[in-house]
Length: 384
Image (cartoon, rainbow, N blue to C red; front, side, top):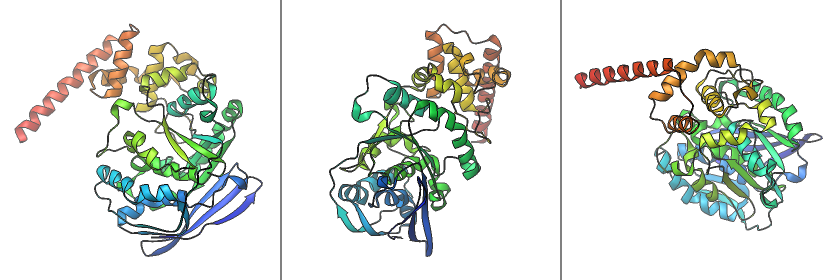
């Protein structure tokens, strides 16, 4: 793989095109980013971002990376071996490669900007609770910008859903009072099923933030799991490695931090429950086709049940269809009671602390799930 020097062009007052020639898999293509909402002073001449974004695709094919431009000295050291070894622990199909930049730079001056990704979900609102709404956060960790990316998180909805979600966020962003940077990209095109978005989102999103390191010195990455669940090993989600991986892709002039890992999913939801902006714009859906919550997917149901137990569900009637929730509530509670999953166990424990009684109909359904599981185990045993 060869990464050529980027071509940077202004396309509007605060819109920039950042395009990198790429020689990969015996084809010549361009990796591009369209960045909306910044001045040109934010864009770095370092190629840290393209390198981090293309590391996994190169390892998947076993192609060394030649870089026709400068990268951070510390990042070169980390990505050359330690980060690759860590990624191989999670995804053994990846191969060790060499990284050969034209130049490495040792930079110590860090820009004052602090940014976080904002999707209006529980994780990102929890980050705002700690680093924007709070009066007790130190200045060096107080947010100055929000970031909204299209690097694979919008799934089959692609660019259309990306733009719809961005448009829906605008009224809330105006109320929050922080400038939002919108970044569209074709980075997703270089990944395959074995390196899909859940397995690589940390690197993809960090790559975008690194493009901005002349104006942004810290990137706060919202944690997707509790500290007690952190591990390095085969997983469907790279989030379990974030507190270990993110410091490794930081440099002396740009820091990536995992934030929010001290909270359980229930605790995060409770921190978000009293935020007025969240009550008007919370977006947790995994099945959305138009940027709104479907109110019946597993993530919508989990959030609504947690809010109901907390006594805050009605406050979120603007973002959830509570009639849809009530229609599927008994079935979802039954599945939660029958599950041994850590997030489901958290909800059950939370219900006990609040003396929240689950309906008898859900308990009856739960026993049906248990009996079905027993029958399946017996049948499986006979086949063996």
